[in-house]
Length: 181
Image (cartoon, rainbow, N blue to C red; front, side, top):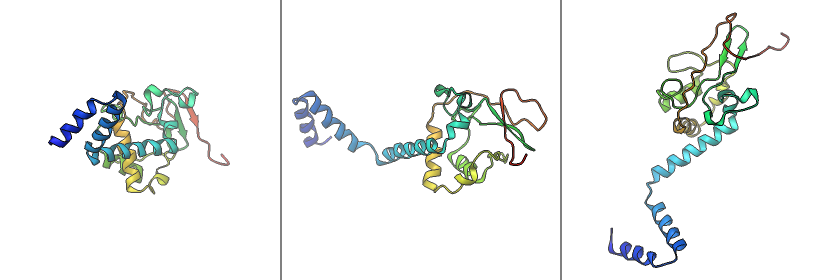
């Protein structure tokens, strides 16, 4: 640390505590690497995009039952969608839990799924997932969503897998009925 900075800090300690705290905050803010500030900004942008896209509707337990479980935010839904010809599907766990969520996915894989409608294993996302709309996201926005999802606390919630047509579903199901059907 240079002598000028040392004198400034010593002088700050003699000031009122609130002024000292302000000075130290400003000083630390200038020392935080720009990349760390950019990461925080990117994650906040991702949070905003996830919120306005309504991701929590299908991916947060309890949402469709009128009591979203915010402690398991984006941890996957226990309510399935029955889609004619597809079967019953559940909103998966989008948190970075390694066993039940996206923990083993890279940000590139998350962005690819958002844009192509396919998981890293090649399984297609279901028609209720609005990936065709999300595929138009800018690179910055798509990667902001991925960064936000990776920043969440992991939630261990094993969501039921896709249930083939005609098979019994393990929990409550909402039926999607095509127009005229």
